Length: 578
Image (cartoon, rainbow, N blue to C red; front, top):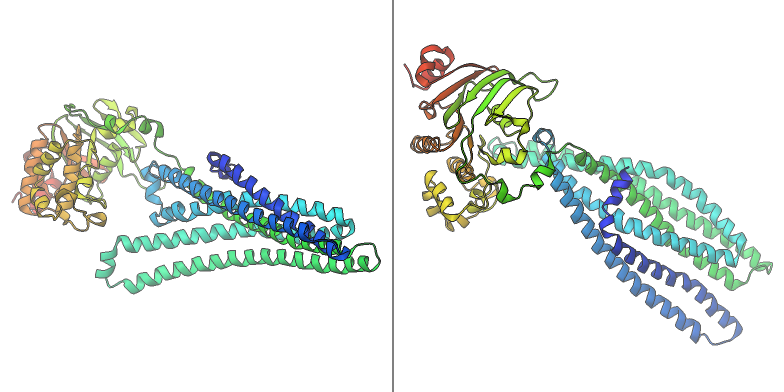
């Protein structure tokens, strides 16, 4: 099954591979002719005849073999790069369509290793490994046929030695595959550990933890080295077995052949040609062993790639059927309402329930807020609405339709989502603002900039909207990243805007301005806000108080202050009530 998957990467390139393989066979045929031509040269010397013809033939065979083999090798390398490109595109396509739940439990560094390192291993096995092995088989069969024509006894001696050593080599191959898979896993683990340190680079520096993290990455690198040494050890053993096979065959043929020459049963020129063909077996046998080793490495890489491809993905057909312009929300889309009815959700079967019978309603249009202590399940509401996760029981209605009945692309096109940490991608400010709505007009872009008070930032940046913002937006402040994320969501013209702690990194002045923006947007669409800072949502039409995975109260700010102890306590700690 794994081999079938491995060959699926070759199928689009089989035409070029056939041409490259034929060129390799022609080169091999030219090589096979050389010992026979050398025999004619020796016979010509012994008979006192002219050697010009045999030497000319030998020269032509050398030149033709070299040129044709070089052309075949170029085609193989070119095809190899095409296979790697196809494998990487296919794997990245799969990675970006995986369910959020699966990506959350995977290590980013290990995923990068699969896209870069594991796909590179496919090139060797699918080009040089397979095609060179075919050429090696042709050369091996051809040499054996020629050796059989010269002396059957010497051929049997040769084959006996080669078969015995070949059997020993075959026993080594499964060990190479296991060792290679462990080595690639160790490299992925090292990448994951390094990625962890780089993602929290400033925290590492501020904590004085450089030495500790260097030691952790170093330990992972040592484990990768140890696994690599295992691969090298088994591979070297396979190479030594090949070398021993040829050397023992040479000694055996020399002993038996010498006695047959002495007895007159074999001509000296035939023994020389036979020995030359025996040395010609070194290359094809070596290529077959190398091809077998590469096959084991490719199978190990394919297993790791297959682990990702076998993970369930979001509906590709729905996403693929919706072009970018179709996913855009319409100009005057009506706001949608949301209703949770007795929703139960947990992040795993062995995990406690995050939502345990959650019921509340968000009316279409206006501002609704979710408040409550950390761990109450507020952010999980947004994850369920975006269908990053699916709830186990209960009903979630969006615009009166069960959320599972919405095509995924259509559902997400109706939502604008600002995450709590407001991620900004490497690239220019313009690219970040247009990330969710690449087809937005220039006036719409500037309107969103003005509404989120980013005018000053654009004016201050040296290249305006074309200024790169650095990896993860490192050149922007926390508040600026938050406003960029909000502007990005507004450009999507959402029917439901989800704001997770949208003002957590803003100063008092910018918070006040953003509250005005939220109030303005709430007149056009539905806005659902998660807020720990209650001053942001005191004017909300409805506030839902969550605690312990459930809803304990809902109402306006004044109503909740009057009859809910938890909300009153939260408001008092923020000096909103006495």
